[in-house]
Image (tube, rainbow, N blue to C red; front, top):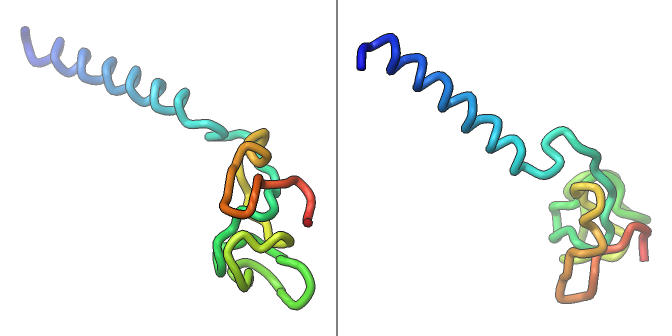
Length: 90
C-alpha cells in the first residue's frame, strides 16, 4: 500500500473509533439530575442543606440532604451502604 492509502485508512479508522467511543459514553451531551444521598463527605455539588453553602461542604458520606449531579435516569439505581439515591432530600 502506498502512503496516501495508509493515511486515508488511518483517518477513516480514527473517525470511526471516535464515533464509537462517543456513542458508548452515557450522557456525553445529555441531561443531568440532582441525586441526594450518594455524595461522599466533601464531594457534594452545590448546597447541601442547612449549615452548608456549596460544593464540597457535605459533612459525612451519603449525607441525605447533599446531592451530586448524575446522568439523568440513574439516580434511583445508585446503591449506597445507606440505601438508594433519591431525587429529593431526605
